[in-house]
Image 1 (tube, rainbow, N blue to C red):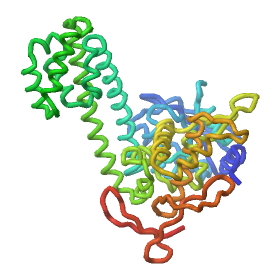
Image 2 (cartoon, rainbow, N blue to C red):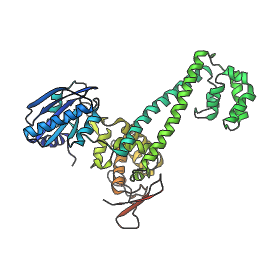
Image 3 (cartoon, rainbow, N blue to C red):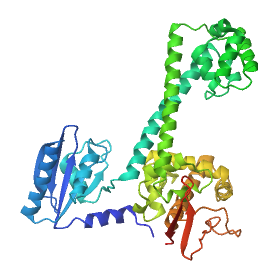
Image 4 (cartoon, one colour):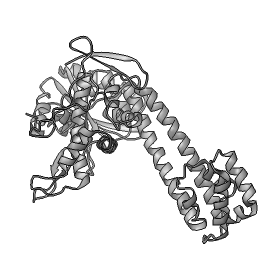
Length: 437
């Protein structure tokens, strides 16, 4: 049976014994404050500030070691705000020196160092995992990619808004902004007046240089649309706005490609990523962001822990007992699990059957699509956990007999040796082996 929140809190509380010193830390940009406390909650010392420098960190370490020696402590637990300044640097420094680090959710309340120490002493804190190596790199690129993607989407909307105002007919000729011909046209002849001045010959030559198929036919459509355009006359400000938006779009598209290549390259360093990539509808980018946000899968002993970490665990929303996902976990992990669910439902018969089954509730009524997709995401987490644990690839093969809870999970694919699962990494073509747990 899964542990309840109260049980986990009790376990964390029991790790604080007579040989443990609890340290609460509030983080600032330049200075931090700390409070030292024993198991009974007695304050052993308060220090209003130590600097966010190497000298300050060394002084912090010396103070902790002196306190351990003075009071005979052998175990150090440090609590700090999960969203404070320099949380990663100080947490890494503390763990390098053998101290346990726990994060406290401060919500909207302003906490001092003593309040944080009390929360940690009572077990109201989260264990901290400092991701290293490839996982930290994947997470960094995933966050950077998300930021670039927002700029990319914003520049797309800005370009469409300009075209809707000044040259709306282009949408019917070039359905996608990714068209090379459209980008070349927006660079050289962006508005109807420019197209009419260049003429059909000028537009045709431009489209041919951009490798546009059927350049003459499309150029004729562009010129005809310019002659009958209902768009407003473009001014100097409109031209500047278009130039900036087009430049942002081009740069963002190039950066996304570069980041996707780096995600794919880093993914080859994780042998078990081949298990996730074997799922139909899951590509290198979504897989890379998934592992970047999840971290090392070995840190999770049960699929429910991943479900909670992603914020897909159900919570009651009101007194009527309406249930919805908690959304307390990592939002980017939750987003990409949802995108992965869309992919597997579209391309996998196994997940499609599960999705169709979840669309109907026990009363026979139709559930909302998003609600069914959230159920698929939770199922996907369980499948991914099993694939990584057993180092096997996904297969659509399953028992056709219906059982309570839906279709059975996919069968294993055994290699030549009994007890060993072999699979090919789709990104580098090499074979990996791993024992079956």
